[in-house]
Amino acid sequence: MARTSDAAGAAPKETMKQSARLLAEPPRVINVGLEGFAVELAAQGVTVVHVDWTPPAAGDPQLARLLGKLGT
Amino acid sequence: MPDLGAIIEKANAEALRRMLTGEPWLIDVVPARDVLPDFASPTILHAGPPVTWGRMCGPMRGAVTGIAVFEGWAESLAEAERMAETGAIAFEPNHHHDCVGPMTGMTTRGQMLLVVENRTFGNRAYCAINEGLGKVMRFGGNDAEVLDRIRWLTHELGPMLGAALRQMGGIPLKPLIARGLAMGDEMHQRNVACSSLLLRQLAPALARTATDSEALARALTFVGANDQFHLNIAMAMGKAIMDPVRGIEASSVVTAMCRNGTDFGIRVSGTGDRWFTAPVEMPQGLYFPGFTAADANPDMGDSTIVETIGLGAFAMGAAPAVVGFVGAGHPTEAARFTRSMREITVAQNPEWVIPAMDNYGVPTGIDIRFVVETGIMPTINTGIAHRKPGVGQVGAGIVHAPRTCFTSALVAFAETMGIA
Image (cartoon, rainbow over all chains, first blue to last red; front, side):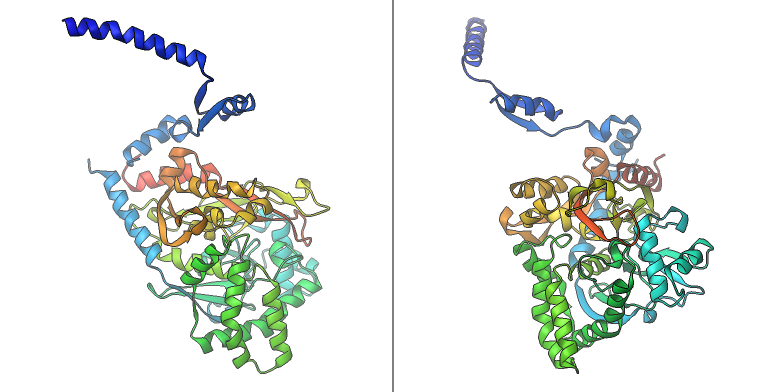
């Protein structure tokens, strides 16, 4: 029980530290999907990694169902 | 319910095995009449999936009328046009007769054809001899200069090349491609290394078999000045590699991609010889001085067989110089194209590697499932023809295979697997 209390007590402190660090340092961004957001951030000097991702089969449910059955 | 994914993986492994174990050799140049059927009426084989005269684009029509005059079916281009309009000329795809052709892809019985034999499987594929750059029939050219060049290819250069190849016992093409990749070719819009390497091998045999030193000089000058001479050989090689991959039950690997200036077509191993077509897209690229996008014809040619075997835009990482030529960005972006194509392919080719990418094997075996799932369409490096007949090439660029070809192929493929 005591260990649980210690852990519970430490977690908010660590979270606060991380939050403070996040606000103190320049942002580093991972952008998923729409590349325009990454481009805009990069233009403002923000460190950004873009992940080229789209929904499977462009979001078409029938094609996604077929792909699921065909083993992708 | 059987594990369809495992069944497809096994079928695709067999497709890949056939692709990678093919041994294509350039063995001869022969009269087309020796290898094409004795058609009942004047017949022209063209690039791409089937298309009628009524739906043909401008440069395809220009080439049709030109080759009809070359064959002696018509006295003039106007007469040839009337023949085509009235059905006196029949049209069939090159792919239906073991052939391929760049851009308009005119193949007729009166021409000479390069022969590539796949010595592992025993099949052969054919392609006409590359005409060089500028005003040429593959881009819709059809005037006296164009026809005279084809006559010279037919009556002088073709027989000379054939004699040389027979004398030397043919040229193995896989090692040639491997060296070409290391020297900056991707074998679609850049063939300068492979053309040069080929000439180095051919020249002694040409000298031994030629009977006329002036004819020899013309042959060496023409081949030596034609940076794209090897393109048609690469295409026949691609066809010879892919034909044994056709018809493997449960394989989702693409066996052909081609376009006729109106439609883009693909074939998939597991669905046999059925075409899946969609309107062809317009290339995005750079134009020669004096021309703009308004002059451009939609994409055209059987040359996408090169991308089908992992070369062309799929091997862009080997050819940074091409990225600028086709207007696709900076040379440092070349590797990105190749890595992107890996997302939609079954494997990498361990024999065709790109030194500048730490010997990255070219992406090999396009899987329609991956194309539909990711939305990444095969990228193609291409030349751009003028939309009017008789003008010729106006630029170069890249184009993507249309998504509809792959979605309709996937639905049909699923049906063959028992899924509606």
